[in-house]
Image 1: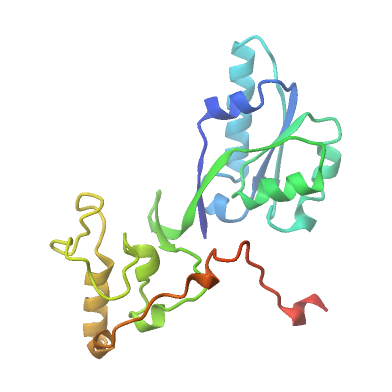
Image 2: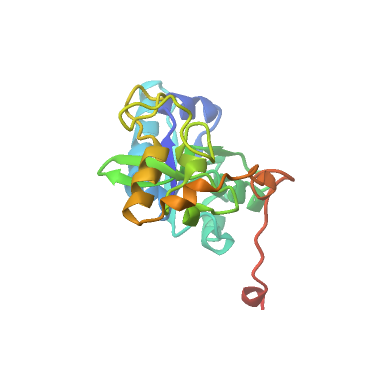
Length: 223
């Protein structure tokens, strides 16, 4: 899932300081799972904004809305009625959401209420870790199902750098697992250590961000 974290309320208040009425729009997708942009967070942020502006003597009207997914145009259509007399929208989805809303309402200011951080998964309740860098060429099948691109601090493809100790990466002061240690142990358990004998060439980054924004087309779904 896409992992995102809340921007400081002071930063959001600064963005909307000129406005009297805003829509706070949440998303029931990834940001709900990581407790940063779902219905509950919409309510909390709306209350914080109202209270802060009331204390400042400059009341703010806030409309609350949470859609299924802000990354699908059909799910943001219900905003049409809500934004008619609003001055701006604060989106607390991943950064796709505010960009879709901005595209739908060309003359309405749209602001991000979250910082999108990475593609990851839950390590424990309240803790999410990065597992994927969306490089566009998944190679984890050759590394025991573990990703050296996203999970090695240096994205090394041919083993550890020599800076790891006790299975921990030198980056993070002992808090980050050395992915190459985990890859070695995993392949040993699978009886596939021979996979490490063939050196990898240069990674093809053309499927990542080289060449600009990427597009995926499934022709059978377009019909």
